[in-house]
Image (cartoon, rainbow, N blue to C red; front, side, top):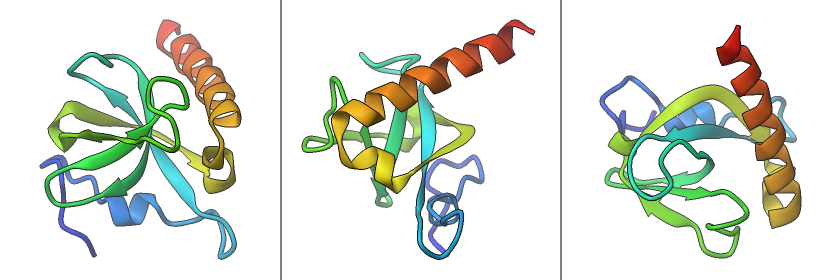
Length: 107
């Protein structure tokens, strides 16, 4: 088990566990600080000091952003790894998820 990176009890190794044995699920987080504040991001890797996040637009799959774990919160959602392999499907999935979260917050 990996060390809790954020002080919030969030265990990234558990979040990266798959829906089944064949497919990994990557956690979707929301940025709470920085230029990307309030944007949804996908965590692709984590170390003790930083997490690597992508969004398919500003931070492409080829150039993940290093982010301080204190500056993100977990949304409770995950995306299949296959969606995060290319920028276009990732952008579409995050856009749909953003709309869903906005609708849930309005209720």
